[in-house]
Length: 291
Image (spheres, rainbow, N blue to C red):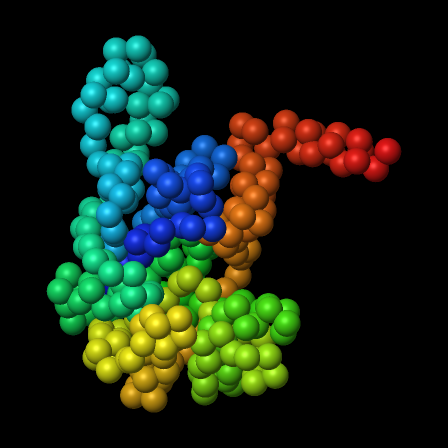
C-alpha cells in the first residue's frame, strides 16, 4: 500500500534549550543555515511524501509560518534583486502541503500520534520526530519505506547504542531476518539497567499501519504518566507483527545540546559554501588547543 502522509510531532516545550526556546520553538533553532524542522521536511519530501501533518501546541505558529507563502518577504527580495534568496524562500513554501493539529495536553508521543487519526484515516503513514536529524546518502525515511514494501508490516528505525545508555531509549529485542532488518520479539521503554541485553535503540522514524490507532486507544499511561508509543507498538507487534530496521546514516538528537552541536559541526563541514573554510578553522582551533 502506498504511503502518502507523514506525521511530525512538534508540540514539545523544548525545556532542554531554555532560555533560547522561551519564545522560539526548538524545531526552529538553526543548524548552519536552516531550522532543524526544514531538514526533517526535506527528508520526507525526498522520500516521495508531500502531505505533512504537524502536531503542534500553543506558541508553535512559527513552524507553520516557515512553510507558508510570504508575500511581503518575496516582494521585498524581488525588488532588491536578491534572486538567490527569493528562490530559496519559494522553495521552502512549495515543499509540502501542511495540515496542523493541536495536541492540547502534553500527554506523550503516543498521544501526539493518536490525535492525528481523523486526518490520517485508514492508511499507513510515516512518523518523523521534529528534532531527530539523520544525515544519509539515501534518506532514512526512503530506506524504511523499502523495508515496509518488502515485509508489509510496520517498521521502526533503530541504531546501536552503548548498553549503559540503553535506559534512555525504547529498546528492541529480536532476530535479524535480513541485512539490518529484525523481526521484533520484545519492546521495552527505557529499561532499567540489567533488564535487557539488547543495544538496539528506537530512534525518531516509524512507518506505521493504521492499526496503531486501535493500539493507542488501549494503551494506558506509562513511564512519566504519558501514553508511550513504545507500549502501543508492543500491542501492534502482538496483533500483526513488527520489524525494526538499522538504517544507514548518521543520526543526531538535535533536541539535546550535545547532539545539536554535533549536528551543527557535521552539517557545516558538508556545506557547499562553508565546508572548506570551516574545516580550516577547526584544524587551526585544534592545533591551538594542542599547544
